[in-house]
Image (cartoon, rainbow, N blue to C red; front, side, top):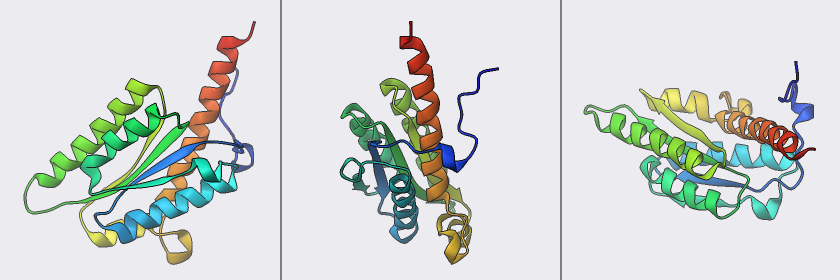
Length: 166
């Protein structure tokens, strides 16, 4: 069986990767922490520092349209970070659904991996536990999303290389 995924972090180097990041400013102390962690991880594995811009949007609902524009602009992948906290109404459900559906649609329309770093939680404490870096006691979802993006790109690279090989 031919394997097209990286087995360890050591296999994830992809020099020159152009990875754009889109971040909701709603709960920016947490979304920004995830984006910063993701950008550090991408650079650690060879991403182009000049090709790794961060773009701010008001909320999670606005992530997909900017992500799609960045994908169409030539980025290898786009990482989206947002936070939707459950409220007393169903508003959170519709915002989260719109963000997830929009990000998926944008990725499929552009054939560019657009990664979902939108936390959907019941409380801010749950968000902190997921968003903050490990050094601050969190799960470091930003780094996880960055690693998922690199893994996806490497799989796509292998598929595309086989398709163009004689």
